[in-house]
Image 1 (spheres, rainbow over the protein chains, first blue to last red):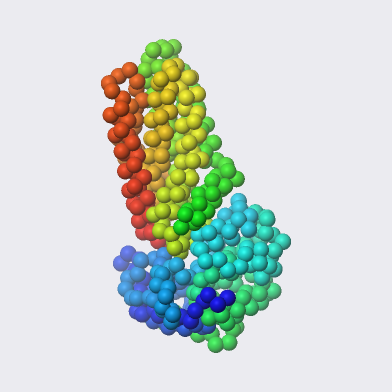
Image 2: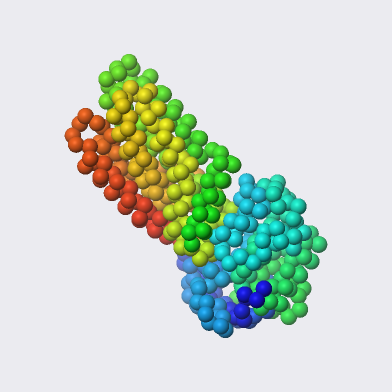
Length: 208
Length: 220
């Protein structure tokens, strides 16, 4: 896991407008290697919007974003160096967990763990060849999170990663996140329940 | 990059095979239209064989429109489209490959079975081949033109109707040249066939760019 080099994410004066209405404005954020930021705030304040804007799914009203890597070899666009796991899990119900993860790897590129190893990390190896449509909500979410391990990308954007996970799975996710941060990765999570990792940066939206 | 595109192609073909629907639906629609028309026209075989190519072409156009609304919508609804936006491969190429996969499961069966359906409309040998050859060029053109409409209506729950309104006018030139190329026994056939090929190539080159722009703009 040495592919992730030291890098840091810089967001300056980010704003997102839908039509005439500014839904998110003036966000500054600096996040270095091995750092985790948790975005909190009441419902509807723009947590998901912020993550989707960073992922490049929404047009920016203003502002700049960059992910600077110290060994500046890789100048790929930001969107090609991040993972996004949101409310929609991007899994196809008719395909098995293995097929879904292989497609995830195929589309995102830069493989790390095999689908089997990734599912083993999430203690879900037994569903490898089951169609994802047969799985429970928590198991589906774990398969979606396994995609984080299948393709290697330095920045993880997770929207409510703990939803539908049981206590044990939350602990698993916590160790996976800790490993990712330990190898120099970055993570930004929108969440109501803190992951409880030391050194977490709190970003509070709202109070505008 | 080729590997990524292959993954997307195989994924869409596998999904179509497992879920069913799309391809078979189009075929059944095609078949029922071709079956019903002779009953409506009556027992005039000469008339039937004269308008046969036109009927097959209209049936192919309508059958192509049927499954198109799900081309990007399914991926938009479950978040797969977001993952594609994060891919190092340009969205335009992914759209191109998705259209090819869609044509492979819906358009190609129509082309392959069109000679059989042509027999039901009393077409003779050369006309059967003319229709199959023109449909081989025409159905991918419909798919690619339709992809623009599918991308524009991706966020709409019932986008099928709007999609038809958007796509049918674009498909009219294809229909005109396709039918005139398929009508053997009239004027030289090569010229309209070449125009048809040109329309097809233009749609393959331009439609993915338009569709990808629409998908990016769809945001949320």
